[in-house]
Length: 329
Image (cartoon, rainbow, N blue to C red; front, top):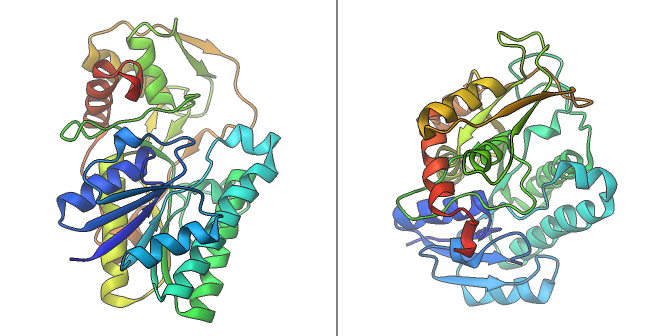
């Protein structure tokens, strides 16, 4: 049985990764500082180590006590707005944490890592859908730190033979009702959970930032991927590294994306709730359409998203309606 170390495994996407690995028969070890993650979200892992990736002695203990076959790294701060006002926090955690992880891998002879990157590495895209060869010019420090880590991975591959897959994607959504885990951020900044909170009456309304974009219904179109589809992509990436040892960068996208109005209308239909929406002024720097191409991931990794918007919203509603205060209840 292979042992996989999941960094950030108590977070939203990381916890879904842990659940999938356990389901597939892997032995799972989790490291998380629990600053934004939840210990209750870690289901079925053999061990949860609470500590900071930047602590070399802590990581040495983790690698010494377990025979790690591969690493999947989700550990990062990820609030775009906060990254703009506090870039050093993001460089200090995201980049330094990944550097420390790669150092531990090198010292302990672990040569496979799947890195959870972001489509924020592209910045303002020149065309749609975005492809892996397109220009990378991040418009915020969060995207810049992820791109810096991708560069570090490339050079560590050349120097030390640590093979990697970096996965770039936009918006994870949904939950895993089978194991009782879902999205619980504080503060919450993602559209679908905010729509769910509005449906629950925890918010007065959901804001639509502009309805005069050059899109079919005038609202912004974004890529949403079911969190379980995302976890499956990370597993396929790990299997790809095991089989081929070939490093690479892949976009994960739904292929067509959904508008803000589509999200709200689908949520109204599935929840049976009114969900008041108010059109507000456009936000600066919001592109009308952001969609990532998934052709390369389909071709090389054999990944295609299986779950559409209805399932994303239904699973999100199952989680939020059953856990109105997240993991606190």
